[in-house]
Length: 232
Image (cartoon, rainbow, N blue to C red; front, side):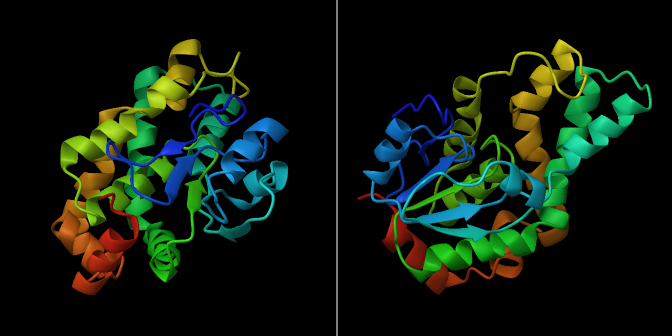
């Protein structure tokens, strides 16, 4: 399914998990696309956007319960401040900032991702989770969910990189970035997700340690997640 007004709406995983989808924000949905999503039975929305993002583009999906799990988009403020100060920003610079942003998902965003799993463990109510572009905060959340349900590293990376086939680069850059730098900002690279995974290993020893100690997922929680969402 490809939705013109929500280009990054899609299932999670090569073999899609059941009852859960990932997306860019749902604040620009047209009536046709909203009906397409509604027909999937989705009733729960998990929103990783920050306060201003949510205010600027409130969810247009009817009949759902929206749970806010805010992770503020610090990369945008960082880049805007540098541009305002007259700093020339290259694509490599943006890539470095993006990697640090992903490390921050582990360093400071872990409580939000723990809440994310808390909602998913409550029931298998059909759910979509998203941020603004559906690529970074959402991409890391999807990677965690796939690992928690037994996906391989290759499967996780495949799902992550599909964003590059979905997201359309905006015309021009509201941040005043060069086309090269803007393209890095609006796409994903393996190195971004790997930066978060490296931070997981540094802080928790392994992904298994992070899922257990950082996110509170023991054997019973892993089993329940697989029962609720694993296809087949």
